[in-house]
Image (tube, rainbow, N blue to C red):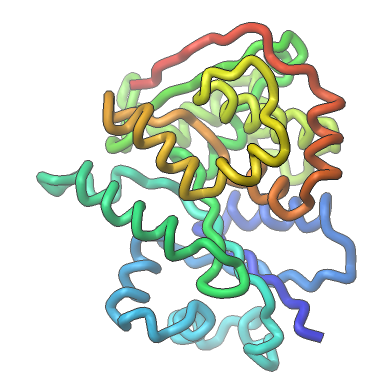
Length: 277
């Protein structure tokens, strides 16, 4: 049966742990999942595909890059791979040293979110702004108090307040619920997914959760990027901290999970805006 799903993640540490946790928490044994680290950013992967005039598929690139990888070699027939999901960082600082950093980043991202838009074809991309650690930027206390922390950060620099990286900022606050954890409870996942939905509503200045049909139609990876660009990047070179993993979970499991999340977590009543520069 053609039932293998590939989770292609950016890094080898937190990225792998998080993908494994999603498999453990949400999937049953009927779904075979292969988790692979690409070990560099999405811009590198897209550049290689573009250099080959998009005639090379992702599986071929992975095999060429890692010919001795046990996970890749365990796929006996490439046709058995039915879905490819890509989990990468926004990484707006990738072209930081170039004079036209903002324009180049925006142009390439606009191309990528259109290209990686189908898990059964080129692969479906989920972006974390600014990086995977965005999933940790979620306080259980804030969620219980119905307070949405709208955290903004510079879209194109690697270091922020006090010259700290975002990775450092997100991992050093004891109120965050996820740092250094390998497994998360169902209630923690509910917080994470609710916080993501709060972020989408915040960007659109809504006072309640999106209807599910609205969510599906207007919150694809492409449209989330376009919102980030129009509302934040184009105007002040910032992005709203937002994880791509809750988006994947909601997309994959659909209406039943969406309704469960919305039913179990009240909508926020207070917004606190933090700017990490």
